[in-house]
Length: 367
Image (tube, rainbow, N blue to C red; front, side):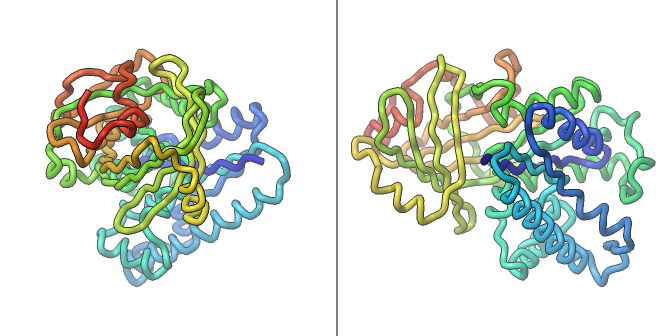
């Protein structure tokens, strides 16, 4: 039984309604049972519970987050009873979207009141797909008519879109789908990304890797669309045909744990399976660590920029360079780097810069 849970999010008038219908139709034909968790804000506002009628925005968001959590849990419990099927839970917006409507201190206060933390809420979903608002580069198609809960002007919609991306930055599988190919092209791009993620369109990931000069950390940390994650990565005993690792991802003292198995097919195509595990399972698997490979510790900055999602890894023993990775859906997709990332050279096809090889070297060793 395979249950996957994804979020479809984005700015106002980004195409979510059409996207959700397309996901239901296309993936049902691929043998999935698709369960859609409806958008909580629209349900509340359309039925009289609004931010302007509640005592404060915080009071409203507290109600919305509590209801959203309850709805998702109900769908997960139902999915677990459905037998041996491929099940996809699709959330029309996720918990982190609420952050875009709140002051940061208020958001963290509500999380604490609800006994939640940011990292668990962000990574409670297997993948996040952000549909950029039509207010960016497709303003002529921006409308308020097809959603009674939508009230934003074009300028407000574009700003809100940026805040949604910033709220989700740091997720290990965030994809930003913009308007460069027109609306129908946008829907095809979304479906391609989802089917790639599910392993239906291709069993491979296409990753590009670059060696860059050590970036301006202060600039990265000042950017709202960038999030920092501390990573500890341990390699387990495995045979020569594939690689098995466990990873702890930590933000603000809260951790999530993952078990990953992967095999390279050529230099750019990667066959990978990954799943979340418990802290108990993580600690148990540590006993299977390969003693010939040291544990890798690195700081990862996840930067969403111009429709692309960069993972920037800083290693404690390197003070003049860093590694940047980006996952693509097509081999020929161009990569546009922000000015802060000064590329030294591409290292996608250089096995010396794979993490497992770095783990075999003394800390600080260069290639």
